[in-house]
Amino acid sequence: MSDPSKLSERAYRIRRYALRMGEVQGQGYIGQALGYADVLAVAYGHAMKYRPEDPQWESRDRFLLSHGHYAIAFYAALIEAGIIPEEELETYGSDDSRLPMSGMATYTPGMEMSGGSLGQGLPIAVGMALALRHKGNPAFVYNSMSDGELDEGSTWEAAMGAAHHGLGNLVCLVDINNQQADGPSGKVLGFEPLADKWAAFGWHVQRIDGNDLPAVVAAFDAARALTDAKPRVILVDTLMGKGVPFLEEREKNHFIRVDPPEWQQAIAHLDQARHEGAL
Image 1 (cartoon, rainbow, N blue to C red):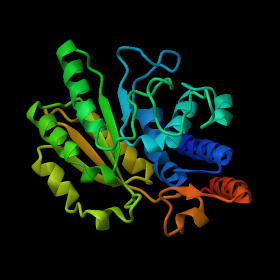
Image 2: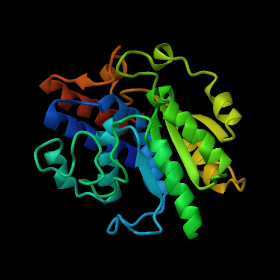
Image 3: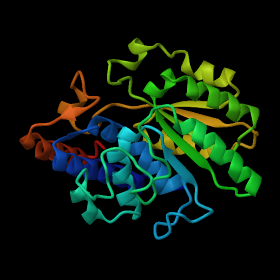
Image 4: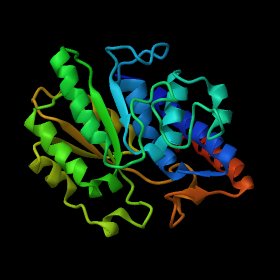
């Protein structure tokens, strides 16, 4: 069992790295990064097998960032994991950077797929998990996706395929922050009762508070320990802007433009929350 305090520190640093990258460009999907940091901290600090010095290690667990616009969050996790050096943070979104504003596998060590066209991650993950099983490779495939991707037919086709093939080496993570570009996700296209839908498709389902670290750890552990030949999905309810009150309270924070002084204010809020044990 990983030390909870160390995971909490990881999540805090992931949030802080993301804010520093956001400050470089003055904008970005920072609300998602702050909300999803706990999940990424557990993935890379507790659950997954990988070698920071060898991102292409054949026995690694694969983490697919289907929601490519979460790249700022993912880069922060890769920095924390030691796969990308911290000094590259300042290059975020600039020409010739290995950290483009949307995830691209050809640029970034540790990036398994080029995301951005939503609904593509789970189909790729199904093929990858099936191939690993045929090769006798025991690695897990984690597909990370947004609740907006529940609107895509390709997601549900892949969900059927994963269950049909009994892919017990596949874990899907769905970030339910209830926001997408056109408004609240549930109002754009209602997706509840979500747990029942995944279960009906033949998946092992857990739904948790994605900002409760012990709950996230328990869910990852349960997903890996399950012996049934069926894919697993973890539905994570998260709070956009977690740890920075004035960002948590914004009505629309799918894509945030932040005034220059507010970046340092956000970091100060985050540091204060960490000092007080609120994160």
